[in-house]
Amino acid sequence: MPNPTSAASHHPSARAGSHDDPRDRGGDRQPLLIVNGLHKYFPIRGGLFNRIVGHVHAVENLSFVVMKGETLGIVGESGCGKSTLARLLMQLLKRDSGELIFDGDAVGERSGISLRELRQNMQMVFQDSSSSLNPRLPVVDTIAYGPRVHGTKRTDAKEAARKLLDDVGLRADQFAARYPHELSGGQKQRVNIARALALDPRLLILDEAVSALDKSVEAQVLKLLRELKHHFGLTYVFISHDLHVVRYVSDRVLVMYLGEIVEIGPADEVYGNPKHPYTRALLDSQLSMDPGQRVTEAPLAGDPPNPVDPPAGCRFRTRCPFAESVCERISPTLGDARGRQAHAAACHMHDPASGHGRTGNPPLGTPQETRLL
Ligand SMILES: Nc1ncnc2c1ncn2[C@@H]1O[C@H](COP(=O)(O)OP(=O)(O)OP(=O)(O)O)[C@@H](O)[C@H]1O
Ligand code: SF4
Ligand SMILES: [Mg+2]
Image 1 (tube, rainbow, N blue to C red):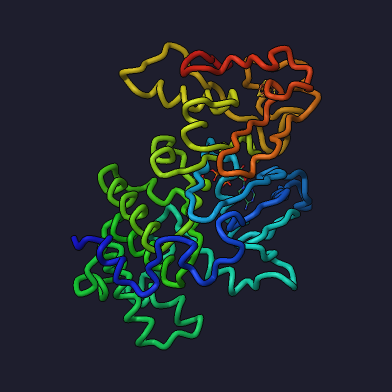
Image 2 (image 1 turned 180 degrees about the vertical axis):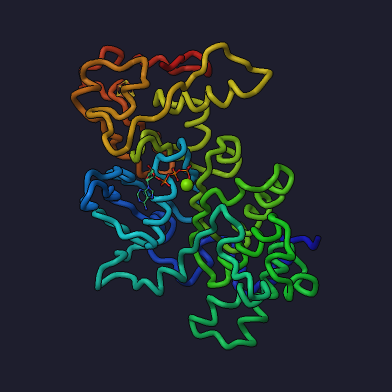
């Protein structure tokens, strides 16, 4: 396999970071993406007349930023809203309310960035490597498709697609004419990455992009993603249920539970010194699967509550051993977690004014100290 690093460095758009990107506005201190109060409920229909009988609270009041050049990892149990969030960011789903700002420009407003321009700046790679590849097109045409739609001449788009194949470690002379069914899962995912890069985006959203690959292929694709990020000056939002992988790739980590952010901070901080009982439980669950660190009790038992009717107050209270009456009555807030170094958790134990009995002394110090219900 050719060295993707050296191939990437020949690409005309290879950049080491936002400083070298003529599209950059506001410099490194201006987040690439600001998400403010994002909400998405899905209606549920039922009964004889197919009326709306409830709503899935999929994403609830999410606010965070994605800084230029960073990898923001997003973790949480199945169904907590990770893919919904990704699709909202990509404008593949319409948000109920909230605000998105891309490098200073509002998204979805007349005066802001157009959808077309946003698509050029922001691309997504999905878990299912086959779904985004047209089975009837050779992969070079799939990769060239986006630039063609955006007005690039056919020969130029194809030439750039061949370069991108080299960049993702697939020799164009061997792979350009192949159809998706002639590729392995790992090779298909490399083509998907090339396709996502074809419009020269600044932000890639990777939703379980390596989760379907076996471990050795996963490691190769993760290495490739690191190299591409450096050479193209990319920013990543990396979604995965695999805590090891998220730690490996992320600068900062955002933990979701039932549609809400429960913790956000630098990866080392969140993993080394988790503040929220749910994050601690997730980390302990991972340890409990490691035979060398076997624990006797399951750290995180039971399923999350129904997102159609989430618990009032703190959504985690039905599984939290530290829940007190204040947790039933009042929903804890995350506070301001906008800086690269900020570490915040939405838990009353971290709010001195909350009235929680363990304020200032939350028992979350070391792995396996906490046993959840
Ligand atoms: N189109 C839809 N209509 C109704 N409910 C939906 C729809 N899409 C997602 N949901 C619900 O929204 C919630 C969040 O789903 P989402 O796919 O975002 O979770 P996830 O965190 O990506 O899970 P996983 O780790 O399994 O991929 C779930 O309860 C899901 O059933
Ligand atoms: S707010 Fe209460 S229930 Fe929620 S995580 Fe903190 S202690 Fe547990
Ligand atoms: Mg998902």
